[in-house]
Amino acid sequence: MSKIAVTCPKCEGNGYIEGFGHVANGVCFRCAGNKTILVSAARLAAMKAVKPLTPYQAEQVARIETADLSVLSYRQLLALRDFAHWPLPAAPRLLQTWRERGESHFQARQAERLAAYEAERLVAYGY
Image (tube, rainbow, N blue to C red; front, side, top):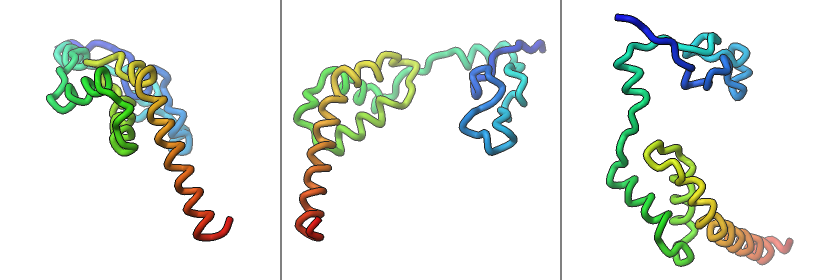
């Protein structure tokens, strides 16, 4: 069985991972710093295949794309924000859609929570 050299998916072909500079000088353990890995043709096909969305993922994508986000609570917006920041190959524009539609609502709710916390702190501690 022949192997095909492909760009390492873990370090994205850099050979190192900057965030892990404190461990083995950041050298990628997957490719050992070689920037590529060897995979079989079947594994390559599986790596390139885009998995369909689960029903939960489809529901969350639909909420981000079509729901009235102004009526959602801070926790609901936070959950959608976290979901949108997780990469989904089946929904490549999700993060951009979130930034266009939801980020302003989330920031407003976050500011409200911060103001309430500051007011509570002022009453409780006098500063």
